[in-house]
Image (cartoon, rainbow, N blue to C red; front, side, top):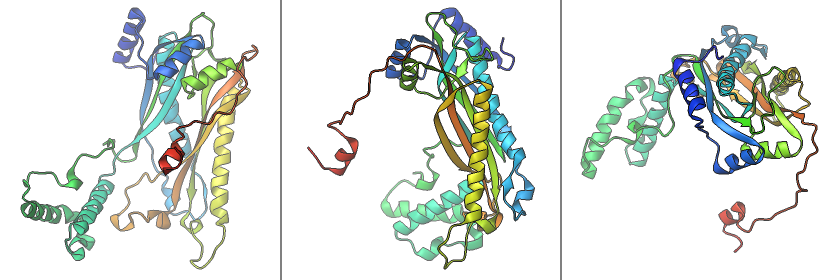
Length: 357
């Protein structure tokens, strides 16, 4: 039984089991190929964790680069909690595994950063509209920019014959969602489609839990046809502090930044080692679909004077995050046809360049 699921999650899963109704984010093609591989989708499963990540204050004053173990463990633990809750939902549905796993991070909006971005958006608009360049340079009084911008917009609307109630471009809703999660807080979300083998054969991992995989429906079908099966979604990470002295050389020099290079090299190696350790714990023989992502984490509210240049003063906090799907052979011979080259007539690159017929 699930031990870490909210009441409504348990009620939804129980209702799905009773009615045998599934929900899924699989595309039509993925749905059909998962069925072709001998599996049926049993439901959309998810897990989340809202986690506070405390920045390491020593990093801002350190002149030596090193891994920040506390932040590495915190970010990994937050992701693991989200993945475990998704696994619990799949377990409640009696699934053999989860495919198409998406693990995302929603960061809280820095109000000061957001205001600064809108300030710059107003500056760009005002200059294009023909207002004097000097009228948008507020210097240390930039925090009062909205008063100046409102007066300028009212004048513009009057000039254009528009209603003054029309929203200015910098006040319109953003295309991307924003989250007010608080300082140094992030939400980690894992979502995927739970599936079960139609013939009753167990595809669970060595721990008796549903496997997790970020493979698409097409890749999952190909993997099964090749005589392999997924046993788990594995990951590794490393948060590394790069001090400001490593970020640049003398302005007139063309040279490699050796310390910076080795810092990121070391961080990648540590992350991959941890991914391999998770795969070995699942008794996997390999990991497919490995991706390496590099993220910069500020986890602080920089002063506006340092905006965009704070790394040169405080250094960078860089996280290397590696994920993939651990696999084992099924013991059955693969029956995938030999691939052959296909050249599409409607190649997107050719079409975009205006060449060809």
